[in-house]
Length: 289
Image 1 (spheres, rainbow, N blue to C red):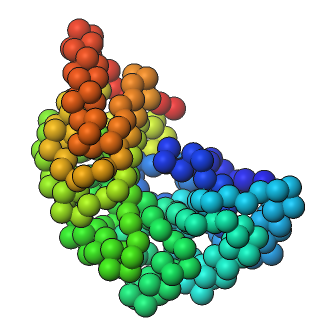
Image 2: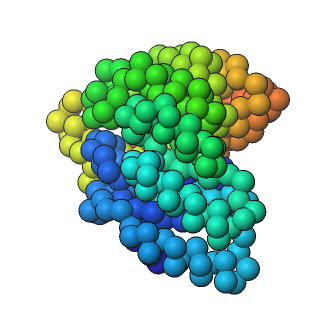
Image 3: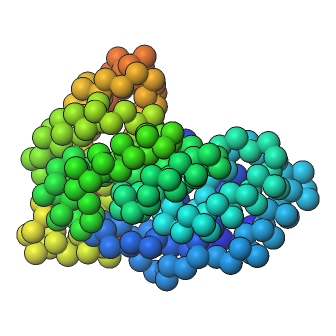
């Protein structure tokens, strides 16, 4: 498979066959993100997509689950998406599930009938970048959505028969606001019932617009200790039954995952151990080039 850019998908999709249908991110304005800044967004030709499906099928590939890339594949027009889904099922008759990333506004702009058609064609889970539970922080990060809009989009997905997974980032609310954000996010998740949450704890990229906000004093970053405490508070408050959670803190090489509420206590104990270790050290900030 030819792939342009960085492969980016949640760990819940690690066993899925990844099929690129676009390059980059059609929004690409979040101040914290550097994944797609170097790419010009474009949709890949249907002929190229079909050629890749034919290639995989010809060597015996017939996956049950497919993940469509790239940054927000769901931005495609519904007519185009339905054509791609038809090709997926033609070449992969065993396919039961098609998942992808989406933005809140891409969901909101599609009429209910189109969402229902996509659901009927096999789209099961959309991953939404919820990121934070605080509207002022979402505005500061130029996320382009409010929590009310996210809730509206999720309600539309549920009515169409689809599920949603949430992407979030501890640390995104800045110094001193981690617990506030955890409580706001927990309340939101408990209302909207995601079936999966992935926490990609915030990296402070030196080349990202957010880093310039740090240098100018507009944003004060939280250290990794506060990020761990934020995550601990979130996991304490989450109530959704059967919720799959996976949290990464790559800068300090720490990860906590499990199913809630079943694994809550062992997840909290693991976090408490990491918190105790961080309390012994000088403050650490996840700054990367």
